Image (cartoon, rainbow, N blue to C red; front, side):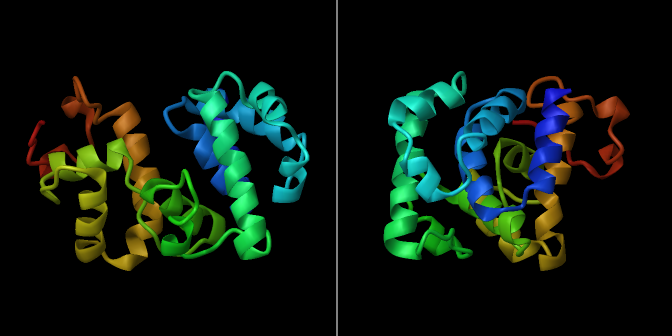
Length: 195
């Protein structure tokens, strides 16, 4: 299916530029929609220079129907300009530097560092936040707080794996509403702190 195709695509394409652009496209968009948009956009180019030769409308057309496609086209062009102006066209491998790029938040920065550079980082999305709290492993109110708590608690050797494991678990078993506790393999260890 398209969802697993996108995950497979991201695992095979660990280029930091593809990673950051794919992350921008994926925000508030289903993986299957992001996958098609990513393929269409990268058929038009593969570098910040290539994308800056495109008009905002050409990028919009390539990435439609991702959520907020008009805004994301602007963000993509802005990131490309910043990369060329400040980083010699290369995507930084440091979270603090990535956060200086307009439109890049902690989740995207961590994903770029972990997927694009294979360096330890903890990408906390809604699933990682929810499950870490539901299990009682952390007690936080926001994904950013969860990231910081996990950085202190979770051994670094697990940082690269936690997002993939908990996202899959959250999408299939430990859902926000109606978690499937009866089939959950970690149910015996769960505090069942449902929020």
